[in-house]
Length: 528
Image (cartoon, rainbow, N blue to C red):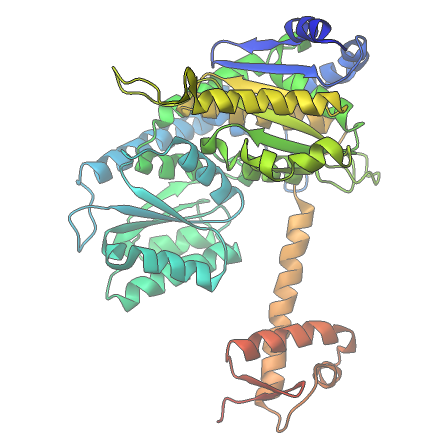
């Protein structure tokens, strides 16, 4: 298609969302003129399914739960007065708490004010806050934010070492809906012990975001933690950015959470319409369906041309892949659905994997995220030029357009989302856009977007490994001599678990945890 025809196609297909300063361009996805008409019955079914979800129909039958993240930015849509009041009260309390911290009405016992925040969480309890904090952070942030999002001891040590003397002015926010997520529990216990080693009382500097009555809620209550904020069972981790999960750290950082919620609300209003040609989330879901043949045959490459949106691909990895990566459809049929997501940022990617995108396997479709405003210039300031009449931002704009053209010339499809600027309102809108698109797409391919049985399977397998570790250590502690992993597995009547036993022993020996390794044999060294 020549450039004149492409320009006309762009104008015909462009979807504008003026209320949030966003446009969606799907013109470089090569669907035919009848595609939308063919898909309209399926799309109307998706609208119907979404409407039922929004009024409180059980959408996660595995756990008999409603899915209500849309209510977080529009409490009036919640199915009952109690839920509406809970949402509104939580936002008010979060704002009030952040104001008290910033105004030094709430202070740590051994410092004049809170300077730093450590967020302890994993998955949706960390990815959303990380994305929001990195995208909207400035030199004027009220607190410096650090993320402990793994059960890696070295990662814990790096944060504690970075804080050093500022640990006494650090607020620790632990986020876990169930309170039983082991990685988060471990991080919280590590931070608690770090405080203890410094002679600091953890409780006056600890905040919990968790389900009412959860293991974490009881722990925080029993120890009189500074604050607890609720996380309801109808909020899924990957769609929790507008609950206390995202709002508590954002408010403490100094981000305008009301504007963030407003942007999402406005996008929800736009994507709730049932006119497919005016609904950006519907159009996004439909072109995903076309690009991947409705079965994930191509990957989704996220290319934000803005440093502040670097973490967008990581955030979308969980939102898209955990929602859509399912073995069974709603009828119990094996379908192995999903769309793989990866990305970094432009124009960095042009010096990395764009070479393969253009000339290698045609197994992807790209999404360019373009931000019109280059930088925040103070009044009277003039943009720096790198050449006469040319700024760094001009180059950035040229690079995304050039990459898009180069990919299209080789038959590589792409989507472009353009926003006016990166601010709280627009970021909220983009998150809401993708949440809705994922929900629509799931209906189009007949899967449940709101459960994650594969994640639970991994947790159960990990628990089995730790149970085996206790058995292995017990056997060595009560046995004289040294043994191979096979011999220990045989002695424990689990010969099929010899490899698991070996990896357990290797780990314990490397960390000097009561096991010694010599010439491929293991023994207990606790008595030495």
